[in-house]
Length: 82
Ligand SMILES: [Zn+2]
View 1: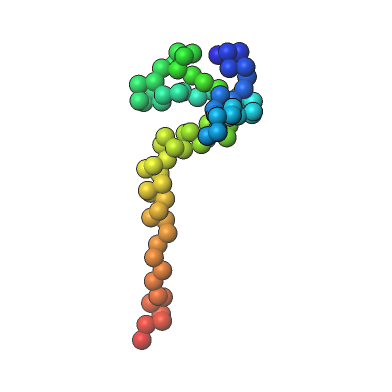
View 2: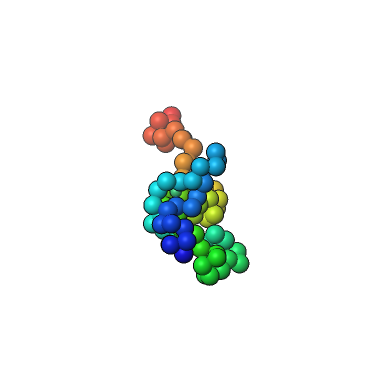
């Protein structure tokens, strides 16, 4: 699989050019939880940057919603009340 992909990240940028980074991470094209496979056809090489980006877009939606609640609305300090 590494040989098939030439040891290079297989991700493509939006303009169609292939990522020039070396493929350091093995990624499931379709996550196993969504019916993906561990066969070589279901795997691809990604650089760590693309792998992180893909992983966060797959599992990041729920995390992003949770993250929003971290910012609490500012309230006046009780000691400032009359
Ligand atoms: Zn890449």
